[in-house]
Image (cartoon, rainbow, N blue to C red):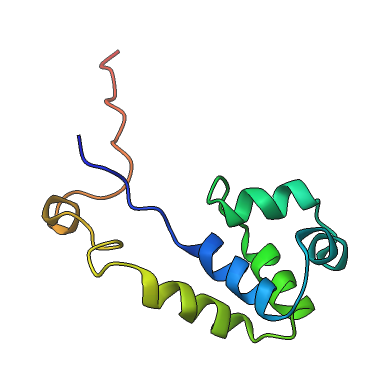
Length: 102
């Protein structure tokens, strides 16, 4: 079984937080999130919504793009590549219902 690569958002968040001298509790209060949630993000137990990424960047006086780029740099090249079968042209859309003859 293939091991899933974990997105390194937590590592980047922890580094940015510590660089700014913030505790998890203080960051959580500033971002209107719980300290437990911040801890879960930092330990990669949860992945944040876009609104959370934006809020965290804002309260740490960072550009959200800077935060995302820092994560992107740490990702392996093959992390977001689709399998070859996923990009092969084929039928798209929903299957059609078969009409019954009355």
